[in-house]
Image 1 (cartoon, one colour):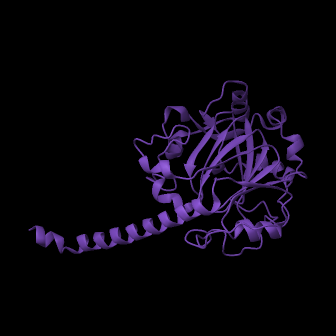
Image 2 (cartoon, helix red, strand yellow):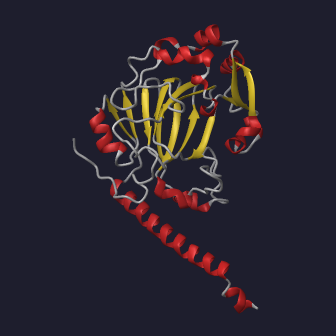
Image 3 (cartoon, one colour):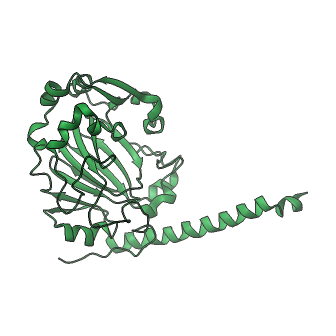
Length: 302
């Protein structure tokens, strides 16, 4: 009976799958170790006014994160969008938030269950209290495409040469708003993202796609590890992950490459805007070719 089971097609298929998975994990482990030896301390580079050509050559196409200063200087939003101004102009408008997040160990797993509509001023009132992860306005609400909030788009500018200038197309630009303490735990995206900080500060953790086997990727795009208190007893492999950390503040733009794991923790009440429609790269923005199993990025002396 055991022999019959051993030769069953399902067992054979599972064995083949396990062999392929083991080979992939071995290759990623080698990539991870070579990266550590080549680059030493994990860090995210920061530049003032990096040109679009330099950005696409050295970061986008090499699947490397970078912080760029100066891209948001011409945004009216940087001067106008204070909490008081938003409460005055949009406070009575209803917004969709994720509420009751602190009752869930990993609230991003339960986004649909936590959806709730509240007046914007109710969310803004949370900014005066203690840090909390209980209420957060996240990208999935598509706030900037709602009729009442369309005027906000006039206060944004697509960074020239980086982002497609038409911001009114669905899913090209999103807004994130919450008090100090909000946390987007470790996850990865199927898109390249330009993350722009309008006000407040956020701490960001990043790990490259080749660290995936050790990220406790138990569901979809999410890790089961709490980045603020990693349980390496439960997830021992996570201890080997080379996490990059960086702080972004008002005016900073962080490029998060496709496939890179990231978590974001608000150190202050925070408003962020994200773009996903990049210029100069037709057909590449949503694919995994860049950096998944490609050549190791090399440091350039510029």
